[in-house]
Image 1 (tube, rainbow, N blue to C red):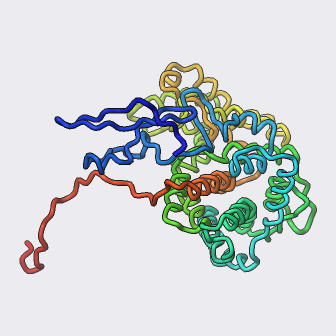
Image 2: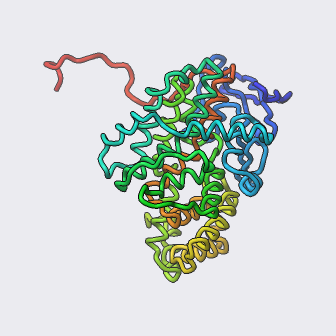
Image 3: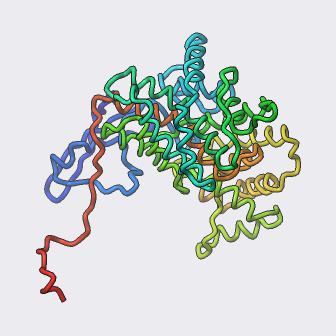
Length: 434
């Protein structure tokens, strides 16, 4: 462990017995009480549903300060990365820990670009799905199936194979996502083009058709690139923890990322932007906002304002500020000046930022509040929103998985439980049961 051991310790007292527990300091953020030997020393477990007060690992990748609204990738503020870099630069940073030199960036871009095609036999997978299958169902299946095609990069003990698997997943995820989209609308697959950058290539695979040329808008490409950067990693969230837990068993990297995709599919995790868009549609007009705000305040009303507040952020989501600007740029590029959903979103944000109830509860707009509007304006259907989230988050999952594999203190994940079921009892023969 690289964390610094503090000279202080925490004392746990149960009855007439006491134990000293080490305290560790990170570079920034809260101190942690080391309970790794708690059960061996005391015979006790801790009880922490959702692990919201438990550090499950040590990591050098992403830092979040929810109270201050700070998100850092390898120490760099998300605002600076989104404003000045591109997604593949962020990928390199998350994987290797440092921003690339020009030569390193060119080499990395080349490697990713030359791995964007998927095995041609994977085309047959799609014909086995119904046309109305959810794209995320297709993604879970196809990402897991990559291990059936790329046997030369599944040995997790080989650093070179880990690197090849990482590059392959970053490169092939946009291709699989675009194929899932094309299949759902009944259009032919569009092969990747090596002369386009990462995000422009993805847009081309989604919206080009064989019968005419398609010109990728630089504004839309840059906007989507920012969206990918904003979603690239977010510390030990549910899907990332799932990837780490799956990886701790020694599962191959493709299976681990498929597990992350499956977890992200949950509406409480990756489906929040879709839910926010549906809410804005339900409100319909700015004049109806007071009605829905009052409903949100009513504890007896099941209605909740989606896109506000965050499990971690207790301040303004730093990604939301960037997303708001990006949303305006996209709508302006597409000539959407009077979008009713945007009118509702802007007014709802204004009301929430000045309403005592929202201020007291610290319910600030989060990234999902604007990303749904932006993706809809670009032409993506709502059931593709989570797929785009998975595409962007893949590099974060891979970075976290790679860090876990290379951590000498890593053990297979094995949470414990507070058992509240029946005590020991003996089997009763069927004839004697009443």
